[in-house]
Image 1 (cartoon, rainbow, N blue to C red):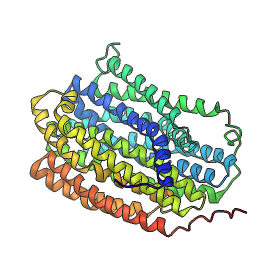
Image 2 (image 1 turned 120 degrees about the horizontal axis):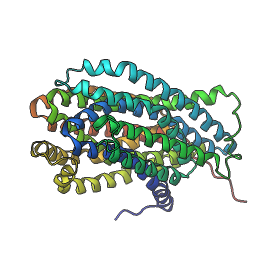
Image 3 (image 1 turned 60 degrees about the horizontal axis):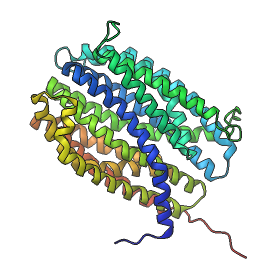
Length: 453
């Protein structure tokens, strides 16, 4: 049995204490998508394909924009580590304004260019036309959603993640009710299926943003944190906040863009393959929220240690995050492998669909550990001040390896080929990013403790 030092045990406890509500909040994000997929999938397999294709470009914009907002979390944690508590309100206010701007820009881009993209992706007959209305409705929810992301990142860096967790699950309840009412058109509004589900998501995301903003402005320490004070213009702080976001956003864009490309590759194979890939991707995306939440918690811990100029603390927090996510990835694999058939049947019981989904789901278990390591390693690198190398490594792994391998393997062995491409890319990315973090953290100076007289 490996003996852990007292500081390492404390780091593990701190990580788990911060991580579990963050993980549940991230799972809540994907549960919203899961609800859409299950309700729409049980309504119609064809509508499930429409919803999946509409979500592919939306996911690119959402995930990239979320990465661009990452500066809110990292800079808030650093300021707290440096003892600049009153200045974190300025980080939050900049993040809110930035989120609203990104949301409006993303919404307009998807409405203008989304329909054109759907017509020119070489999809099977009727799929692009069917997905376009849902895409436009999803786009309308972007401004509110990105405002909620800024608020959630701010609360997590303050070590108040439970508020974001509860808000996310309240939003999920709203989404479930709206889906159950709107997808079968119980109100006789003349909309159903994928479009109706997109409207349910719009309502849920709006509720989430309102709840989080109200919660923050009502915090007892809101005034002490500078939430109500207009921040003094600080171009250096603004650049650093955007720089962190640029690095994270670029990485997220590369990774989610690669996965969206895989969805369009599945669309070239046919409706059954597209629906099967939608189920596989949704299940793995939900599981991915566990390492995503852990990466946020590990990033906060590393960011604080970095703000305190504690190089050893940076290394310890990062390695603890990587170790914990490795264990949890293995646990997830041991759950999904024997339960693949039951999980797949929750989405749709069509035998032709299940014949494709079940073996692909079992195969996904081979990349859970590596995928978890790479996302945590990327985040702790950024929190330790290494912004651009994770982006470069993601580009190589997912743009240079996964997409070409996915296209070739999919046309050879179908949906299983897409999964094999993810396995290869995740292993490659995890090795590169972990090695990079070790190098970065070991070059940071150790904190000098004050002498005891």
